[in-house]
Amino acid sequence: MRITLLVIGKTDEEYLRNGISKYSARIGHYIKFTVNEIVTPKNFRQLQPAQLKEAEGKLLLRFFEEADQVLLLDENGRMHTSVEFSGVLQKFMNAGTRHLMFVVGGAFGFSEEVVQAASGKLSLSAMTFSHQMVRLFFTEQLYRAFTIIKNEPYHNN
Image 1 (cartoon, one colour):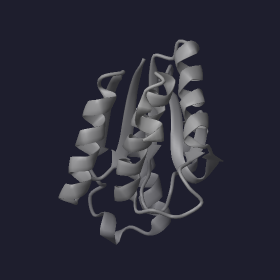
Image 2 (cartoon, one colour):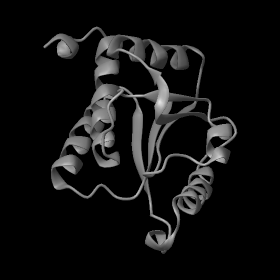
Image 3 (cartoon, helix red, strand yellow):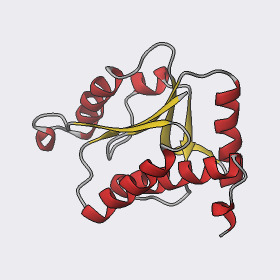
């Protein structure tokens, strides 16, 4: 199985890029993992929120393939503890999933087309985080999940 984190726009802050890079490298010891940053739509500052959501949706959908399992990182998604999330990953691996994609949308969420194309939604917290921070939090939780699956000590340290 391979896992992709698909995000809109670049990660601006160096400390976030460093953290994401650190955890991405660690995840690479368990599974093929990539972070794919999609260029923000042109003239995005002139678009209304609904227009921006649609434009971002079209860009995201280009990356979805029929066999992919796509989970949207969304405030309205299902919340899991770290241990429960590791169980979700284990189920996808046991099912023979070839490609698991986690998607972080733009500031206004996902277009209806993207929601319809996804397999489900996952929430990292009831709190709201910047889309930049979510990238770091998610990669850390993904790494944590693999250490839980492998019964390694990281989770309890």
